[in-house]
Length: 257
Image 1 (cartoon, rainbow, N blue to C red):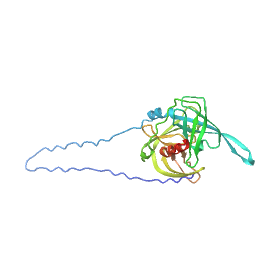
Image 2: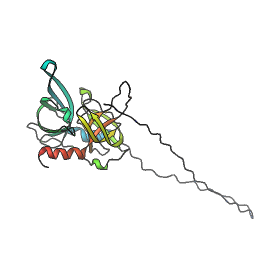
Image 3: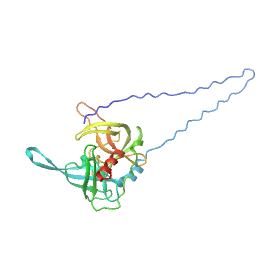
Image 4: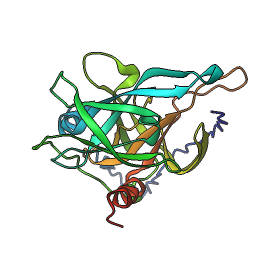
């Protein structure tokens, strides 16, 4: 992926308030200056641990066996890994289309479990990189709380959760902010538009996982991260599909729309 990063320098100005004291020369007086009252600021701190506690039960690990045509017409097999978001108690999972591309089998490991379960593909939208899968024979899962990506603003806190690099020992959690909105990028599968940009670290394996706001609501689905090349340097540039956009596609894949 080619990425062009523009750096903006923002200047901050300090404001001052002055007061002039008039002295009455007709008789000596003592002048008392009242201390200025400090401005009150509402300080809020992102509680990543609380966000993770709320969201983690709805995050799953996805692994696939893939089959592709290699050289000389030979079929080659391999494995791939990604992340998913639980949508329903009976096992509907949202993920990226590229996570399940060319899959001959799909397995899902639920939060708190170590044994993978079989999943089936409900449908994919490769243009928008959205897929819906379903874990077979489960009940009582914890659906994620879906937020409103239209209400997201640049500067908002953001937390990315997912199966980064397919590491053992549970999901990886990174924090940052919403860096920009309405981004368009080129990926292997084509052109993605209207993306949320974040500086929360997104790595291979994070694809399909949630981008979460400070209240633990899903505002995006992590899909891509910019990487450096010989001519381009990229740091902390990740992209997520807005959840409102993804859920519209889910409705189509379900046949609801």
